[in-house]
Amino acid sequence: MAVSVDLDKSLDKAYEGKSLKEILDASPAALAGVTDDDAKHLADAFGIKTVRQLGASKYFAVAAALVALESAG
Image (cartoon, rainbow, N blue to C red; front, top):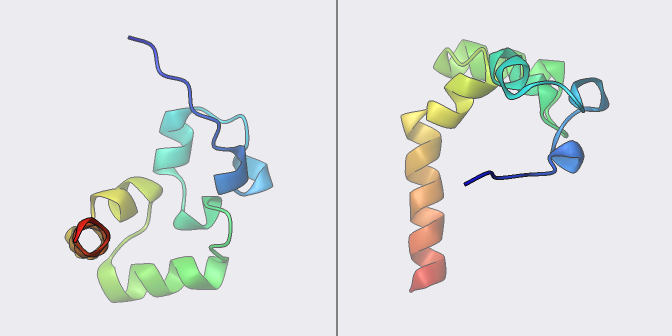
């Protein structure tokens, strides 16, 4: 089953229209609202240097799960 997602509002303008691989391999600053300074802080604090690493981070996964549990309860 094909899936289509419009991420343009979630990405920095420079990354709109890029491939999924290019976005995942990019700095977290590729995400709308994340600055280069924010990305540096993520790298310094958690070793997160790409969007892929951010999405796979156990810390952010646990935080997202806690928020989902609160919403379900």
